[in-house]
Length: 598
Image (cartoon, rainbow, N blue to C red; front, side, top):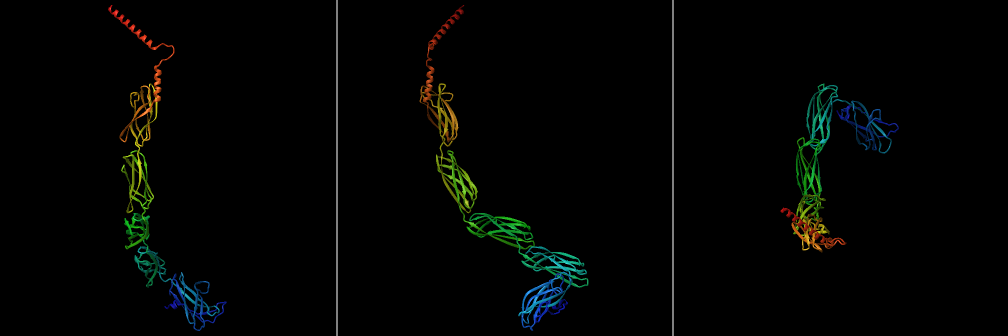
């Protein structure tokens, strides 16, 4: 059927004067009205193409202000319109498309109206064209449901077949195909679909390429009257190239220094990926642990892989992560991600600060190690050296930038003074570094002196008491204080000598010794003996005893002198008593002899 005369349209051309408007002397014609599709069904978008002609009999152009399509008898029910369509020259035409759609079948009585005026002025005119549309629901309905998805990713779709005919349809077969889209379950035989019934068939589709694709569903069937027919419905889907996401995270980097980084793989493509291989490389960057393999990564999961990298030089470099994987459809895909890194120039700022703890020949050197650079110091060794001392060594694994550590070195001096060179060696990235500092240590060996000495007379002798004080920086062992005998000084009990024992550095211990003197003496010699660093040292000191000795002599003279006054002389009395006792003894012996004779 010719499109121009489709749907048994009755065309009546009339030049009408709109009430309130004066007629113009213009020969205007609606040359044709074409309707597409010719046999519309409910829900179709029906295109009505109206061709307006400005006849050659006119002497001016025709300005088309508006074209409408509305229900007959009701100008207010406008289905579609177009405004400001320009001017049609004399003898020319203009075709304007309008559209309508009806959800229900039936016969619709419409009017197409053209509103315009002469280009040279004048009153407005209206030309109308009657249009009758018959909308019939003549075929089963197909509804294709398919969503946008990713390239290479399988997705589920469905086709719903609804029989809106008045009788069953038989020999029903559904076929689904796509433009550059792989379809599984492509064909389905439904046998019979009763009138008013519907059936839904599922299928799986997977776009092969990026872009917009059409999925077509074709239904073949036979009506109750034996007529075979087909109906087709299409849906457009958009396929994007969706890939797993790669996120590269790196720490601050320094040229020649190994840093750490990681790559996180997030799978959100809608299906699991298998045979996953992740590699990392760089431009002028050395990468360790640069490859990792995963058997599978489920949809919605993420995995993280760590690696170490070392820029070869300062400046900007790039790190590249490449992921190779197999999709559920079996296709092998790759995705890459690149990140720029800025490598700093290596700064070596390791320093030492030294202090000492005095301890005689064995001392402790306290060393504070500071790392004020921008890279960790590894394989760190702190040691000391001196011609007059032996110094220990301490090893440290690592010292991070901005950190400090305190170590203690044992130093044994072979002289009273030693100049120490304290050095630290370390690895800083791919370089070897060293720093040093000097310090001097001294020692004062343990030295025992007698302090706080007091000499007092006591029971006919002199008691010497005081403290054995260690004035050195090392301990003294086996300290012994003794009275040294001479012509006029004799060591006496209870303490002719006193064993003090050990006296720590800068400490003291008390002692008491006793001496007898012959007459007045000015001093008492005391011997101090002790061991320091394995060597016994002995010396004698003179303790002033003048005052105490004079006091003791005075006491002795007082005890041996006269008591004074009119008492009896002691010596004559004693001699008399001895004589009397002797006489008595003779008499007694004579008496015993005489009785023995009897």
